[in-house]
Length: 178
Image (cartoon, rainbow, N blue to C red; front, side, top):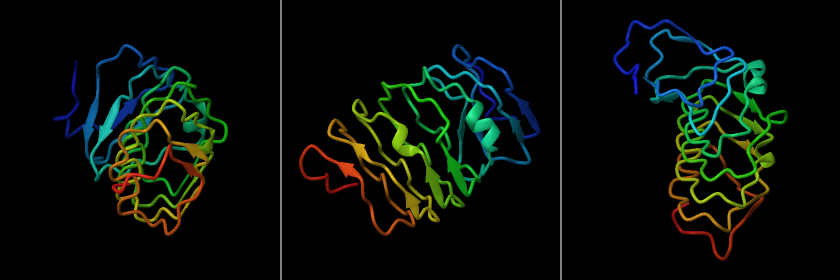
């Protein structure tokens, strides 16, 4: 597939109305002034960006609500390194067979609150590793999640602003490394 890893001069990437279900193009890297338009994007087990911690792109609520995530079972890196302070997922349709949420909100340094995360059916999730890692401002998230099938929780809440975690059900005792 095509990588935009070395496109340091890329300033605008329009994904409006794109079906990225078969695409092999991935943007890696820092923002460097990059503006993305991502309205009405259709995902299918593929997210076209894998940003590093310096990216800090802010998705608009209109963009988030317009995404078709109904076929996406791997939510890895969906909001990684975002610049949003609040992410509201209340009107987003998720696939009922989500299997991983690893790195989903990794390095979202400004993120304080996530709304609607409890809408994800977690019964088939096996990995949540580093889901919120380094989201240092995060202080408000309600999960109401059943993580009884999760095999990998490592670093899920590492380096966050969360002082209390409620709403998680484990099959037995939670692993020591979450």
